[in-house]
Length: 119
Image 1 (cartoon, rainbow, N blue to C red):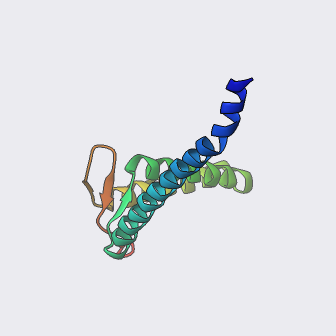
Image 2 (image 1 turned 45 degrees about the horizontal axis):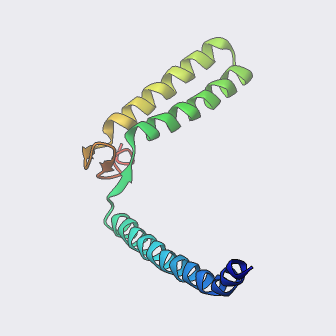
């Protein structure tokens, strides 16, 4: 019974310590999030956007799947094939024209997005 009473008396102290620890963790996470947001904002302001080349290629492929389905649904096979090839060539040219330079092994930096607009 005394053990139970001791646990009961210590519960508010333990709870206060846990709340204090959680608040400290929240402050640390908030500070890290603020620092990360400042880094990304700075990169955007300086036109140095971190972009994964493989993710960009993946999104182009996803777009091409939908585009190809649309073309084959509404046009003849010959027109759909020609338009699909034309779109694939255009995407390959655009991806090639983007000038990536490596920042780290997993992240690439895109120097400018306006390279394709100049054409």
